[in-house]
Structures are given as structure tokens and as C-alpha cells.
Length: 145
Image (cartoon, rainbow, N blue to C red):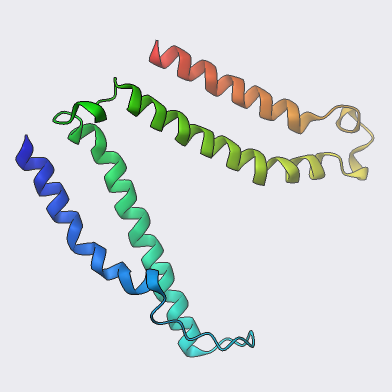
């Protein structure tokens, strides 16, 4: 069991040096004038590739936590630490939705062209957000017992 988690870590570690130049900004060649240059396009592509690699590594790490949790008691899905991490992640996802999506929904659903029906008389965006939040909470409560 320990050899499989060691194998996983050893297979991920070689990719960390590939992103070090991207993180430190060593190749930053911004001219400051807002004009796109081939060098700036190359740097942008490097940052995008670095972001993809970082997302894939973080995803692999997150997916492997239950596997590693067989050997480390603090990382088991039944532990309080794992529950707190899941609750924090759910809060981040919900707050991102509320901060970035909900204002646009309110703006679109209160458009003056929609005043003819019930859309102008009731805040449907808030209703949909609350029903979605409560539905998610109920599904989580039923799934976890």
C-alpha cells in the first residue's frame, strides 16, 4: 500500500520544475503599451500551459487523497479534517457562484423588457439561488446520512 502512494508522488514530482519559471515570471516580456507582440503571445501561451499543468497536478493530488488516506488516518474520509476541507471547498464553490453569477442573473431578470409578466414582480434569481442551495444541502445530508 505504501509503495503505491510513493509511486504516485514520485510520478507527480518531476512536473514541478516545469512550472517554476512560469510562477516566478522569468520570461515576462511585457512592453507596457498594450500592443501584442510575438514574444508576449509566447509568454501568454506559456502561462496558459503552466495553468493547465498546475490544475492537472492539483486535481491529481485531490483525487489521490482518499487513496493516501488508507495509510494516513488524518486524511480518511471519515475524519473531521477531511470534513472541514470538504466544507471549505463547498463554501468556495457556492460563494464564487453567488459573487460572480448571481448579480448578472438579477440584472438580466430585472430587465425592463421583462416587466409584462411575473418576472418584474418577484426576484426569481434569488429564488433559484436559494432553491439550488437548499437542494444541494438536502442532497448532501441524504448522501452522508
